[in-house]
Length: 91
Image 1: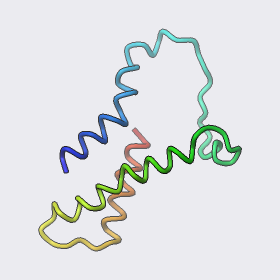
Image 2: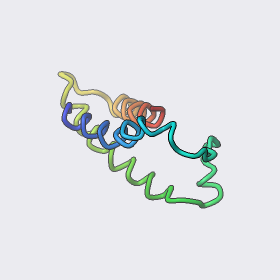
Image 3: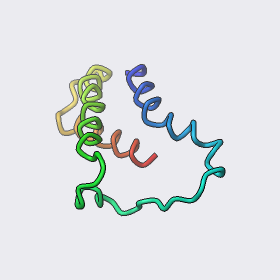
């Protein structure tokens, strides 16, 4: 589980960490801060990103019940998987 979470954080946060030294040396480009606007207008590769996010969180759903002594309920596993995805997107 630790190895899986390390890889998830590496692949999702590494582009941000590597761009930190250069964040003040680029021209200003407006950021899109409106949620789901790409989905509404059909811009970008949002379908690919959604599929990759689902694939990325599937192992968590299988590994989470293995780290607990008791058998967690399905709803609890789905909730923790959602919270993992939400925290990655928030970061």
